[in-house]
Image (cartoon, rainbow over all chains, first blue to last red; front, side):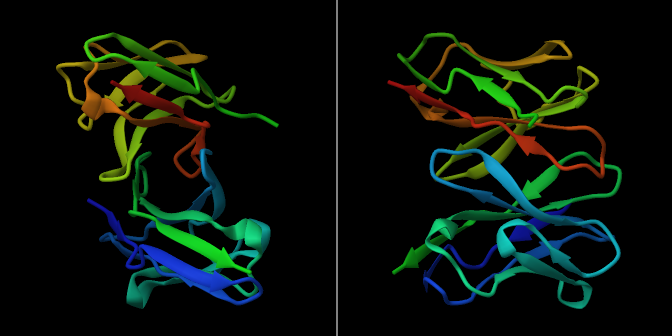
Length: 113
Length: 113
């Protein structure tokens, strides 16, 4: 079964600074990988996803993520954060021909002025 | 802009009462998921349906929880009797195909006193 680890529970970053959120997955084959964002009181919104092809994936809101098979990682980055990026971020992994996703525990991002 | 809708958005009830949560998936999406989110356990998959048939409900406490899809436009999650430990946010999500994206509803925040 697949699993996801997000090593950072909470990250604080200054507005305008860069952000990187870590995600490591465990799965025996090529995974489907996702990043979702959850603002307080809201549902989860997809930022980006990786199924195959180019390992650098562009998403919404200026986010990107890079799939590194050798490191079993799918880290999320943003060059310059905005106060509105304060939220909780979830990495998820899915398997080929399986509808289920396994979610990480989430990383809470705080943006300071 | 197609969305997953959930009702009610908030529910406060007393221990022992029956609770029913409803979800309307995006039109054309034939796979529906129920998740529960708590601070302690994070995001847990309770059950999911494909073409209205349950595919996996192993994450759901069978003695008090039940999930159904009476038709393609409605999924229900019922708790009877409810307990304080059921207090959580319950999310519904839907998707069209295995390589599609799961779209989440806004959630039902349940408080059992």
